[in-house]
Structure formats: structure tokens, C-alpha cells
Amino acid sequence: MAPDPVTERYRVNVPLRWSDMDAYGHVNNVQFLRLLEDARVIGFEDWFGQDRSVLSEGILVARHEIEYLAPLLFRVPPIVVEMWATKIGGAGFDLAYEVRDGRAASEGGDGDTIYARAETTLVLYDFTTSTPRRMDPDLRAMLEQHSGAPVPFRWRRR
Amino acid sequence: MAPDPVTERYRVNVPLRWSDMDAYGHVNNVQFLRLLEDARVIGFEDWFGQDRSVLSEGILVARHEIEYLAPLLFRVPPIVVEMWATKIGGAGFDLAYEVRDGRAASEGGDGDTIYARAETTLVLYDFTTSTPRRMDPDLRAMLEQHSGAPVPFRWRRR
Amino acid sequence: MAPDPVTERYRVNVPLRWSDMDAYGHVNNVQFLRLLEDARVIGFEDWFGQDRSVLSEGILVARHEIEYLAPLLFRVPPIVVEMWATKIGGAGFDLAYEVRDGRAASEGGDGDTIYARAETTLVLYDFTTSTPRRMDPDLRAMLEQHSGAPVPFRWRRR
Amino acid sequence: MAPDPVTERYRVNVPLRWSDMDAYGHVNNVQFLRLLEDARVIGFEDWFGQDRSVLSEGILVARHEIEYLAPLLFRVPPIVVEMWATKIGGAGFDLAYEVRDGRAASEGGDGDTIYARAETTLVLYDFTTSTPRRMDPDLRAMLEQHSGAPVPFRWRRR
Image (cartoon, rainbow over all chains, first blue to last red; front, side):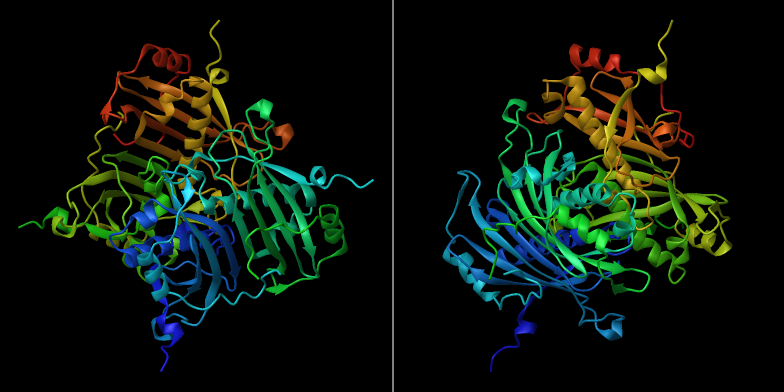
């Protein structure tokens, strides 16, 4: 029996800040990308463990795509970012995200609300030589453990 | 003879902040979206003049797509964001951007460098009734004056 | 026997963000004030519980004073902000903070390091009438439970 | 005849960003420190010209003190930060600021409003040896050209 793809997803608790709200009183659209940055930092530390070089010496953001689906209000409990690889190439990979409430209704939450869906293209890079670098087998294996279906964007242009 | 589409583009000077740099010493990828937010605020005040209601009472960001093409280093002179409408619908529009150096070589700049290309989908909204609203003819006419070709994204997914 | 004033202090765990670092690779001095803002939001929700009106409808920051004592590097585990009232007046109060590592040496931390000391003057305000307002007895009682000695600033001007 | 000390002050135009506003619709108190950071970066480039080493290789912020005097609303025209040295020591200096509207009444401004007063203690530092460094005569001479009276804080603690 196949695992439930939803429950298989990697989940990162990402705390909001009061200052993520803009003058409209909602978490600002740009700050969503900031939350995804934090999700990557927290998640990659877990995925890649001691091999921090993956993070600190060698990944560039080449592209973001994000859709906003529901307004997010500030609260103290963290939101949940689900995160998975959607495309693993020779010198980079795509990372997908869903930003969710993450709290059960019994906790005052609404676990089903998806605030945003997004995708980031990351390129492996060697900062010492300023050139792209090949993905090594260990990194590929780790990403494959966290891979999933493409993001179901509603409004992607063609 | 058709006008040169490049020189027709609307150009906004957007100042950087020293804090736009991240620990890598480059303008952070998320801050690019912040610069585009400022370009919209400055540009829309000019485009829509006194009719500030367009801005303050009724536009939601529904989507962003951005590609990073070259690293941007902090400097005191503003960067230039070129900005134009690429799709004008019944209740919203797409806005395209190119982030450029904007200084001639004689000024120590490199006018040809494009740091990023991006596109934002904006939806007209009535915050008092919490419903989308129709684009009125004046807004449409103004956007048509500033419309142009789709963004030539390199890595758009299909 | 008097309680140990240190262990009496209210402690708030405040997560860092990778973006709190500036181009020098340290948590930026301005971001320390942001961390203190978060400490207040989290702490006040706990101190004032259901009576959110204290927070959302009526406190203005009138003043900050902060001293930086040691460089703070980004890490995923939260820092600890100790927070206590140092002066309780008729229409406002001073809040003191120490920003600490908060992890025991056995956890890879250095619980004794103090990164910064700071003090904020807060004024009670009635936004509906745009006037200062008097402190009510409940608020005063709560603040007195969390009060302590003045901040031992090293470089305060006289 | 002595020069007017007010008109002698060094004035830096500092652009706001829409995102400087918080959920209350005012420029956030923490963002004021961000504006002062920008004032230093812009001003020091002018004061210290080619000798960028003063900025990039050797100044630490040791302390901030700031008082908020009037709410600042977002607008596209820059605010004005007046900036002057108040104390010049052997290994550092204090920098004072007043944050002003800067526009004459005829331009829709209110040149007399002071939004905030602040003071920063800066320490000269040699990052290569991680030690404080002595102020050289050229830097001292430049600071003396931009020196002025202490900040008239209203609420400074004693």
C-alpha cells in the first residue's frame, strides 16, 4: 500500500513575527518568501545534518513562483510549511511548499487552510570557483526521500 | 514607425538599503520582491495620480514569479525597475518588471545588466465588501498606456 | 529568604531568522530591537492573557535604549529574552531586557553570554480618543509580579 | 557672526518604504533605527569619501538611544535625517540624529515636525585583529566639521 503522500510531506514549524504584518493587518506577501527562506534553513539543517556545506557554501536561489490563496493573520503559534522536492536535476532542484495553519480545529486552528503554494528553483554553486557544481549522490538520495508531485498552481502562465 | 519598446517602458528609481544585503553580501532574493513593492507604490502614485483608491483600497497580490539573473551589490544610487502591464483582464492585471542598473558606463554603471525579471498578478478588490471588483475604463486606459510584451522568462515551468 | 532575582525573571524564547544577519554575518543591531518586539508580543500575551486590549488597542513605544555586549551568530534554536518591568508609572512603564544564549553548555550553548541589554518606555494610549490613559489596577498588579531592578547599562549618558 | 547651528547640520534624505509601516499604519518604531542606519551609510560615504575603510572595515554599533516624538506616516518623498557628532573620543564617537519632515509647508510638508531624536555610539574596530583601534587625525578632523550639541532627550534616565 502506498504511503499517504500528504502525511509523508516534510513539515517545518515556522514562527511568525508581529512585524510580518503590513499596514493592511495581514502577513505581507513578500514576508511569505521570508517564511519560506526560514523553512529551507530549518529543514535543510535537518535533511543535510552535519553537511552544512550544502547550505552555507553552495546554493543559489534562481527562481521563485508563489500563489496566495488565503489571507494569513498574525498569531503566536507557528505556521506549518510543508516542503518537498519536485524536480531533481544534475546541478539543482526545485523545492515545493504549501503554507498551512497546521493546528487542528480542537486547538483553535484550521488545519485545512492553505495560505500559499510556492516553488523555488535552487542551483548548486561553488562560491570558491564561481561556477555551478554537480549534485553528488548523497544529496540526490536525501532529496529523493523528500520528493513529491509538482505544485498544483492555479494561475501559472503558459 | 513603431516606438522603441524599451524606451517606452516606465522606469522607477528604487533606492536600495544597506540592510537589503544578506550574509552573503548580496541583495537578498526576498528583498527583490520588496524592491518591486516599492516600484509599484512609487509608479502607481504616478500612474493613478489623485485616484489613490486604486492603491489603498483595492489591489491584492495574487501571484509572483521571479527569476534572478545576476547578483546585485549594494550601492547608494538607486536601481531602476522597468515596469509594464502584460495582461489586462476584467478584474485584474499582470505587471512585469525588469530590475536594471540604470547607470551609463560613464557614471560607473552598467546599464545593460538585468538583475531580475518578474511578474505579479494583481486582483482588484473591494475591501468594504470583500469581493473582487470590475476594472473601470479609466484604470484600463491608464494600464494600456503602460502595457507591453510578456516577460521572457528563461525557466518558467510548463 | 528572598527569591533569586535572576530565576524570577520572565524568559521568552525568541526564534532568530537567517535574514537577521547582515552583510557582516552577525545578527544586525537593528534586528535586536525586532527581537525585543517579538519578546513583548509573546510575553504580553502570556502576562495579560485574554485582555488583549492592553496590547492591541493601547501601548505606544516612546523610547528605546540598547547596549550591544557580544556578537550574536545565527542559529536555529531560539535565543532567550529575559524581560521585566523596571518602573511602573501612572500612564506607562519601563520594560527591561537581557538577550541571552539560554542554552546550557551541555547543549552546545553558553547560558552566561549576554548579547544585549535594553530598556523600552511604553505609554498606555487610547487610540479611539488619541490620548494617554491611566493604568488600571489589574495591569499594575500584573506588572508588579514581573518587576525588577534597573538595567545596569555600562554606557548610559548622564 | 556664528553660523546658525541648525542650518549647519548635515542633512540626509532618506526614502521610506511602504513596508516601513506596521499593522498600526505608522512607520514602525524599529524601522526608525533602520532609517538611521541608511542615514549613516549615505552620510558617511559623503563624509569619508574614498576612505571607505572607515565604514566597511571598522565601525561597530555599541549603543542606541531613541525617543519617538510624533507618528510618521508613509509618503513617497524622503524624510530628512539631520546628523552630527556629539562626542569624539579616542576610539569612537557618538552620532546624534533628528528625524524631520524636511518639506516646506508650501510643498505639503511640515518642516518643523521632529519625529524622533536619537544617538548612536560607534566604536572603531579592526576586524582583522578583532580589537578596537585608535581614531586617526583625518577622521577626527572630519567629525569635528560635523559636530554639535548633545541631543536634548526628554526622557533620558539618570
